[in-house]
Image (cartoon, rainbow, N blue to C red; front, side):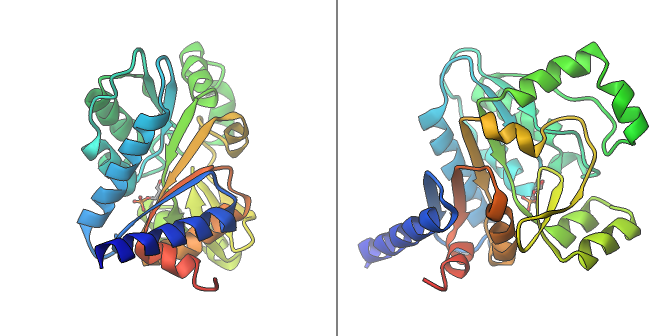
Length: 254
Ligand code: G3H
């Protein structure tokens, strides 16, 4: 019986790999909307996958969110030399425990790695952005972020994320009117994968992902299936770690 279940998940992993054209998909049993334990399993699966690909002197960028915070919770020493962790972006209006900086510092400590943080107001006006990116200290960390070897990131439901980040009402309205469904890296996407809104921040931009070796998405829960579908329309990630509930909805037509 157990083996049968495992084989079932392997089949879905294969289907998702084809559907989104990914190098690797890992599906853990359960629905992380319902059980925190399942979200922890996503975190654990992410940590074990990271251990397979990470090498000495690599730079690893991490985003924020509750899923990434459980990656931090389950991290253990990487046993590699000089690994540097950086936050992909600033706070995005999130509570401190969901911010990329907080998660980055915790992951790095548990991994026995180094870390650098990004101390910039976020989101930021166009005017302030143009002057702050001239700061040498900001440029230095931006360089690390843009040239990261590995990115670990979450995917969120667009409206849920916009509300959680205390996004101004008119922007939430704009996201709704343009049928925004998914969110990743502070970008909001519609069903076709088009960007419908973007938070101006210093840090990782979608175009930076093209040059990165391992872009690892970690997202699960039935509530995120549409969000994941929208993100992967144009997504640059090559690995997906998800749960059974999201995976079954995403492969229902197979
Ligand atoms: O940055 C936030 C992610 O895109 C999703 O957050 O893991 O709490 O759902 P989450």
